[in-house]
Length: 371
Picture 1 (cartoon, helix red, strand yellow):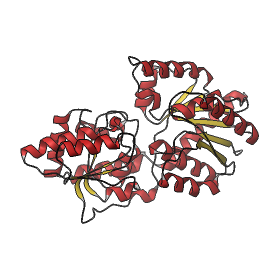
Picture 2 (spheres, rainbow, N blue to C red):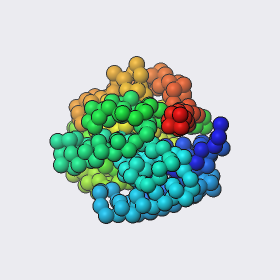
Picture 3 (cartoon, rainbow, N blue to C red):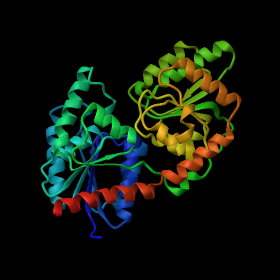
Picture 4 (cartoon, rainbow, N blue to C red):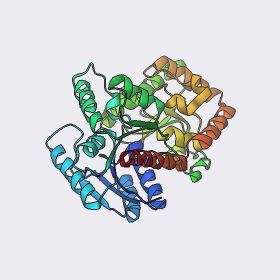
């Protein structure tokens, strides 16, 4: 097949979205395609900068950075112009935007020869139309849908939520799940100083860290003196630290800052994912591959990962339900369930299948346009 010239656009180099772009860009380059990336100048921290530095030599079309803000603002004009110039300079066949901001830039940029691809990764889909900000973002998504040639959703949940909150896609649409590399299926053993629980992710209220802290505080009154390690950073880090202090858990909860996922897993015996909203979280796939027991919320595409074991998921924000799940998982670890989930993730969520699915979707749309 003729190699494609692909430009990926994202805002913040953090989280699962960033991991997805890095993996996809690396694999596309390995398949012989010319790949470039545009990202925000704002750093995602030392780990993100190291990942970008490692990826850059494989980017035939280069890595460029431009100012991008989380909220809608005047900087967006310059960012859209930058993306358009880059796409035209490199002769992009595919302009693939990730997340709300990356997706907007890719679809607004002046690049008539490129197909415009959008992967939401949650983003605007987490908002409710009942809020002022949600109404703005969902309305903008509705307008941008007209400039989209291909929607790629990482979960059936994302596809269905888009249809419910915005509109049924009139352009081509496909679900392509996130995937893992073979080496990620090596087991991770807990360190000698591992706590009962570990949380790994961005420190935002959306991730439900406060629900975990409240559950631990209530369990402490019943007797179990659980310990936890909270790995990550984010805008609500101070709030969570203050809550730990207010609930008298300072000696039971430690904060480490960001760490690579597998290093983080070794800091606990049980992963807790108490999120209020998700799309298809990499941390759950990574933990399953590492043979990590976990307690997780019933949000986003989580049921697509767990399959028949989805009845083990707990309702988001339900402190009592999370308490019961933690109590049971720690008292009676279900090794068979952990092994079954690991095998399911190995079978269904590979980076090879993810890359093949995305490239096939590109080719189908390009072929349709030419014909």
